[in-house]
Length: 109
Image 1: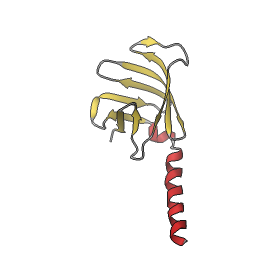
Image 2: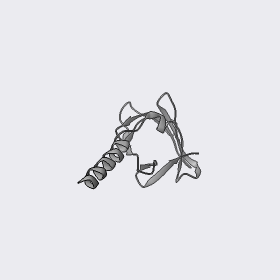
Image 3: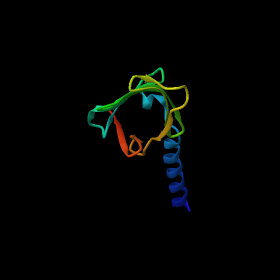
Image 4: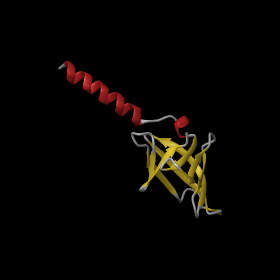
């Protein structure tokens, strides 16, 4: 019974750690696969973001929602986006990275 209680406490602690994460964790530069400097997301303290890829750019605002990063685009490839029409919510993974579709981003060290 003690083993079960200890395991339950450990699982609860891990689940709580990933249930929400602080905004400070998001702020900074995130690189594709942690190494590709040509494909990156930059999250600013004022909750704005910039994405730069090989053939695209975008800007918008971000927030955290539980264990996800929620994004609202304001500009794609230099063109304004109608307010609140392009949005997405992307999971923070157990290793601290986050994922957009099949693309994994890790924070620049």
